[in-house]
Image 1 (cartoon, one colour):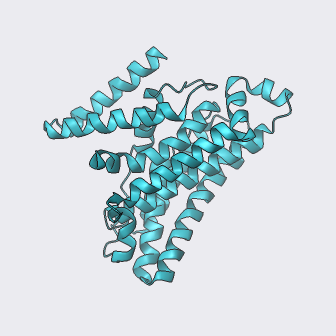
Image 2 (cartoon, rainbow, N blue to C red):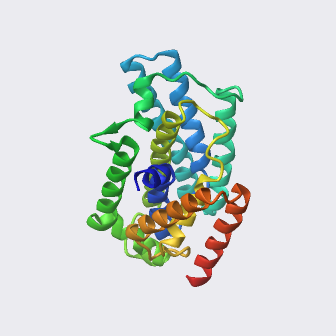
Image 3 (cartoon, one colour):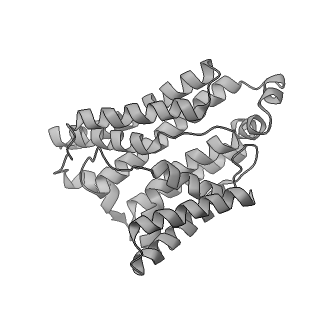
Length: 271
């Protein structure tokens, strides 16, 4: 069970952000590239300065990079009447290119043990990534169900024009959601780079679609206005168990992609 939870942590954290975006009638195609970029940023700083201060600087820089990516998407989305699909696709391409440029197209290895603890260590037998995932779940739950901002998400996803008429700051909400998605992607990027002990500019390809699979499988509507964090967690566990079982039975990795695609199609049809 710990192994399955550890496997879904990186994508599961992204799925928390995607859940809020889907409920609000928005989407984000950039998380995979942002994960790679923030992982490279953190790795590059840590390798140059492996002290405790350097590790903290690396984490702050990675989180800041994720926020900048979210800020770009959010500003364009809020200011111009363009689909989030197109905007975040552009950010996805830019972030991947930036990761490749920073790393010169090569992995950045030799990360210090203290940094690797974030992705490989454990506290009282519980892996650190799982603890971070639980904290993200709790914060996301609080925002969605115990704040005015969370209710506004459901209202905007149900009918954006009605939300505007009701006095909801839709533009500010879109910006906030994109910032949250960028931040959570950065958290995943830090965990992934620490887990694989290197900054990989070509990693996390398609992670955003894995996160969307979890969200859709959990019952969140693609058209906005309905969904739940609980469903996303269940969807993440289903994907984790299914992937683990397929690996145990030596199912071809390429064939696994076909199965995941069929699951998404089935979930959409059911929705």
